Image: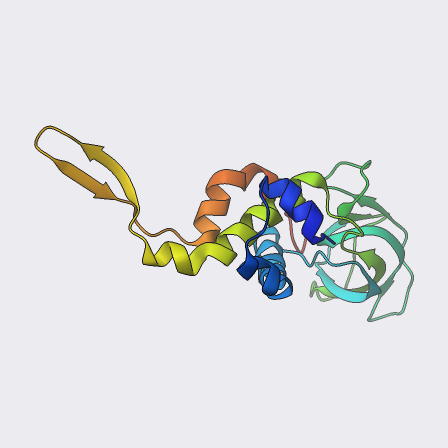
Length: 194
């Protein structure tokens, strides 16, 4: 997904010896954190996954995918025609929703499980997500050092006053810096749409 050279370019610096020695571990933790923030697995894989669709609905929010091969209702084994979309937009290189050709109907109004066979995740992370991953990597790799250091938020000379930074989690810092980017990739309607 991302290698050491690309990560260094995105960070604008060389990795430290500690970051190089534990690169795989820091990258794995960072990727898991990014997937948690985006709400979707990002590693490329081709497989079948199950999603729920309520009776009367025409679209389903799903994990990020590049292409889908088939959609099948698990209760009837009926193949369903559909169009991929990205938060309601039909043209994009990746998708996070599937618009079905007709509304799901059941006699008891219970949700229907759909089996979706697709190419999930990204072969290569888009540049904006790669930058977010690099920033998470930096925070994860340096979090123990930062916890040991005091961080001053503001100082005032007259009447001498010092304000220390309140500890923020990696999630809070990343959302503060990259909230719009994360929201772009997060399905706005994970699970079900009308």
